[in-house]
Length: 87
Image (cartoon, rainbow, N blue to C red; front, side, top):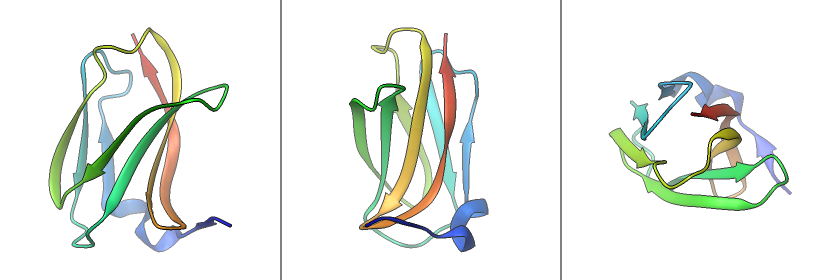
């Protein structure tokens, strides 16, 4: 089972939103093995990438325009989840 860990919610900044090409994930979190997963609204996983401390750029250029859900997690803990708009 997954659990939402609110203590890390503000350690990740995801921008811009809406996004065209690259989604930036900034983190001052020093934990390793963090993942970002991006899902369609129907729950299909379309992108999964490992995140590193500091900043990351996730290429969304191949996604069709629409609304997606991102989840930042480590193991069974979800640190942040929200929607993004791809245009």
